[in-house]
Image 1: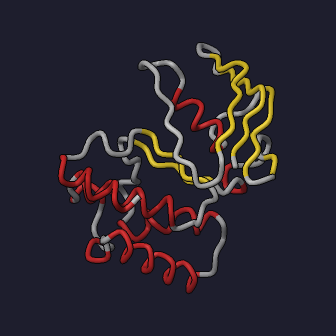
Image 2: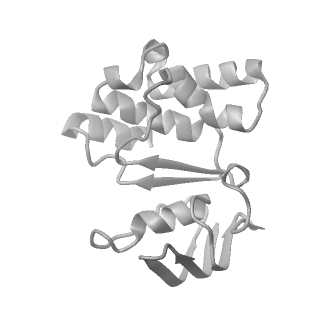
Length: 173
């Protein structure tokens, strides 16, 4: 379960204030709003990418608002994929595991397992810029899932995909 209580995030030129919501475990929750309303800022605050000025963020009974991002067990996938262009697909997927200082053998095994699940095993040695949009999105999803997050945040993850790939990714998720 996610519970957000009286959340305040101040970015100087943008303020999220008094955000409250509860999302049950296993539930899909969609945040709708116009461009610039703060949907992405809210997701990034939950993930720990912006400091919380006031309020609480609870995930599965743990208060995480003041934890570092790598301690929160949150995965996030963006519309633009946000892959590191200088890293291979394998290195992109492994990135979060390396931050957590997982053993090399464990990283290799987990990367191979998730690559097989999302169907990118044949792409592991390639760079992101050589991939199609659908392939890049699969890699972004694999990178988010490989760390076994308690919560997966998706910021318009399918909007840039063609209809066939979009349907396939909806099934995967």
